[in-house]
Image 1: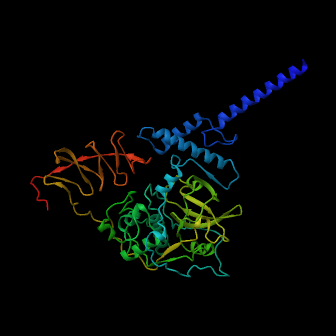
Image 2: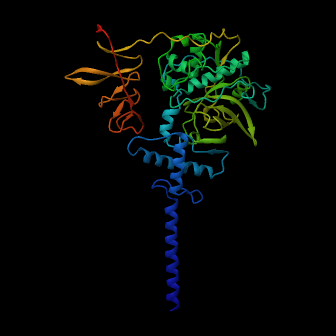
Image 3: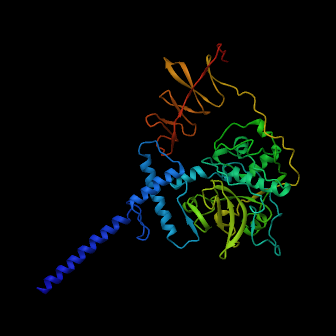
Length: 462
């Protein structure tokens, strides 16, 4: 009898343990591919609340059918990654920034933009020993060019791969302040639109090419006069010829030498390329970044100084993803003189502009450009410059009414009402969206056409 009771108790306890374990697993399992530790789990209700708050904070909305659910799953997976990291013993923290609804692949495609050297003909490196570190050199223990007023406010490149332009302008702004005493914010958009011999605007570029452009152009316009739009555009010749800030030449820091990079950064802000495509980098929020990264350079940033915290040396890096990313737009990156390439390859391709003389007199804002030429649709209709003619009413192969898509090189959708940008050319009329390719998950809202302007007299089309 006692044996039977004992066996019953054992079976009961085993059953209770099994049920309890199953309940615990149901709580900590987010999906079939990813589970968290018991110290880090969140309920789906909590995650959904975080997602809704995040959407409001970042002004996000999704029009495509099922897209919100898909983005929620990506957000949830990113949150798990962030929670797991922050529960460990690290010198830096991750957080739910504006990239939280993007996969790492989507993030890398849209927010980095250094062109690899092998992709285009590389001009000869301008080698120099100006900042080569030599035994006995005395370099300050800490430098921060922000304290010297040589760094403009944090800017935001948006989803345009123009980081190379921001790295270039940051270094030009810094050396100009040091040489003249004036901190002038210069135009990234001029570089995006006008520096096209080697660089490719939102499709990437290199800082050395941009320095070469500024020198050959005789200077660069201001940010105020030639403001940033976050997309490729036609070069404004009048603004290109407004040369407010000049540089004399540029040079490269001795490569793979953090001691030389430190010496260079002690003298002026330095343009550098790094590998920023990792998931840790994507969600970096604060602290000294010691995360995993390689040397496949894909992002241009600006070294504005260096320092030490709790015995850990770091670089002060200005990014171009807005002030909400990282430490108010900045990153403190691990610095290790023994590491030749530097963290994330920071010492591999560092360069800087040189300026010795004054700027030319500031002519003030550029006068308005002449009236823009029209885009001719047919003998009877025109559209404004930098738009695309789209037929609204077609009969037997003839168009009897035209509309204008307010973008250059756009795709005209079959609904005769909307259109899509050239880089998102696939129309989905039912959803009212545009995508990069037929099966691409990346979508933007379709754009409404405007009516074409009828001409008073029939044109002779050549």
